[in-house]
Image 1: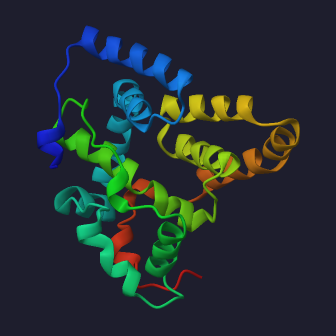
Image 2: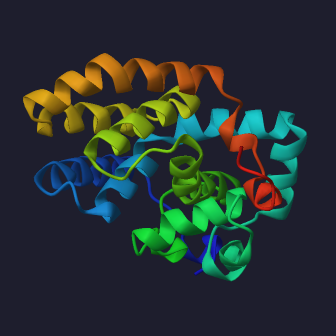
Length: 210
């Protein structure tokens, strides 16, 4: 489905209602990716607007906005054929080892403009590329650490809420490990690395990951 066809225009009160309903539903069932996605979209407009402005000021970001690449099977399947030492191959291995598909992400529905909808889509679709780059697993600790990086990069409220929710579900050993090691590392990584939303990842698939 194209970004334009997926969009649903909501009034302010409708956005608030969707945000409240999604928040309650996500708390009850954190595995509901569609509810989490809706909450991100209905609470993340200011953050996505800031990301959009940063992308417009970056040569690579502007290229992304102009060409609108998608991290979907149709466009990234060549990564599975790249040499083992490349970024693309590492991404393919990450996805294949977990039986993930680039097409699994729910579409963005509740952004006001096509441009913002694309930025939100891009942020959603590069998530697994960031897992690959930072070497983070998809368990609760790994996802929470990546959410910290995402928050430092984009200031999305839902990222911090996800971290708080994750720490609540940690056992004592996991919580101690996360707070002592993963959290400070993720904060530094998110603040010190390049602007991740301004990287045209597909152009770097054939590069050596090291």
